[in-house]
Image 1: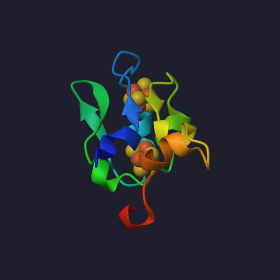
Image 2: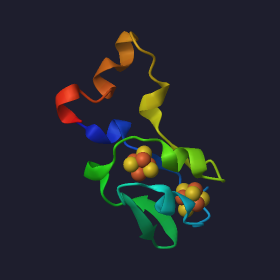
Image 3: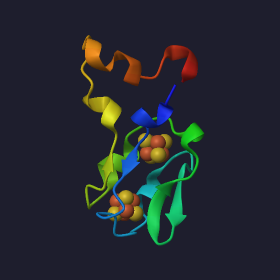
Length: 84
Ligand code: SF4
Ligand code: SF4
């Protein structure tokens, strides 16, 4: 399964490198890489949305949240219970 489909996506073109998301991440899944935020520990991410909420540049998107419950076209993009 391609789990990257529902990982936080950081747009490096929009990211200013302010570090707010890195400070906000409760599991230290984010870090500065080349002056921009990067998801360095995707396996640690709990999808809490703190990074998306705090980013002043709207550089972070958690695409899985766009999926609506019951929408058959995105069922396989949602994390299964046993994978959380
Ligand atoms: S969604 Fe939460 S746990 Fe995942 S990278 Fe963002 S702040 Fe960290
Ligand atoms: S909060 Fe946004 S602009 Fe700041 S480092 Fe994180 S992704 Fe980049």
